[in-house]
Image (tube, helix red, strand yellow):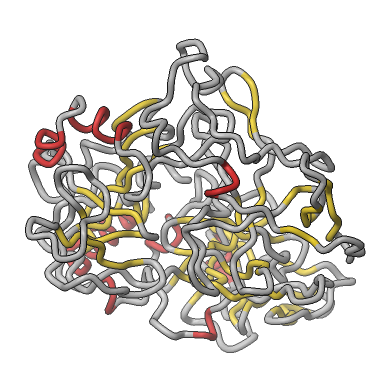
Length: 458
């Protein structure tokens, strides 16, 4: 089986190196493909609020202006925890924080934060979602009194916010539903309804979309040789593939149906495809089963395609997104060690942390060691995930309109992407986890499409 898998991987790599990812449905969702949007379980909403079907994070709650709602749940850091506690007042205030906490770091708190003259307060970055006086609870929606006496909407006990990075309905640039890393900051999370899936399944976030797994975290697969709502996996097929059986009391729901494998034995099918687990999976959220010809991981929705000029290349443990020359693309992650845990990985935030980690504070050295991925087009929105932004190379902030030396660079979810000078051959990812705490607090991470070839899934 391992030899067969390696042969399949080799064939796959040959093909993806010459085929634009945007033209391949193996990884990406076609633009405007509404059929791939995730279904959800309806819940009662306060008047004016809605559910937005976003391309990046699936269904999310939105305020009356259509802006995505976020919570800031308490998150354990190295030396303590930060965020909002359930059923308690918001810890995001209008006070500008000036020193670090020491909760994320091996060094103590009390050090002055950079660029205090430009540092915003928490509520300037994360405006609280305020409720009218006398607003009544609706289902899991309640109100919590803020320190100034105003009322703030909360969902499931956690105060709600919008993000200044979101400008229109469907934007989700302030955060992600992906599980935060242990060494990362206490991030904000988009809030939304539960996916409409049976209790034995779950949805997890990966770079290629919202991946369907079972309740244990193992990947779910579908087979090209099955018919609509009918499994053809029998006899020797069952040596490697286990049908996901439905309990006798289960009923069809939403996009889920039950097909009868034998009298009294039902198998779940999603969007008409019978679903299975793979005996060869050695870890959670695996893609190993998709190396077998005719078998594919199942998503509730896929991420929008990257620019057509990008490619997919073999990295040292998997597949990475790369530029037109095959050089690995990296995202930059940064959250400061302050009580309000503000992000510092966006061109509109301080660049002190990035300049320190990529070039010892020297902008020119940063441009040489971690160059931006330049775009050949003028600034525009490519799709919900990808855009082109104009950057001032001397500061890392947005360039002024008409600035002569501005760089037009590709951005993922509004944040520029980079290459690493230490990558010498196609597919190298030597810069992966470069930075503080393996890059989870302040550093660079390779844009993995798959990282499970060496049991490194997730």
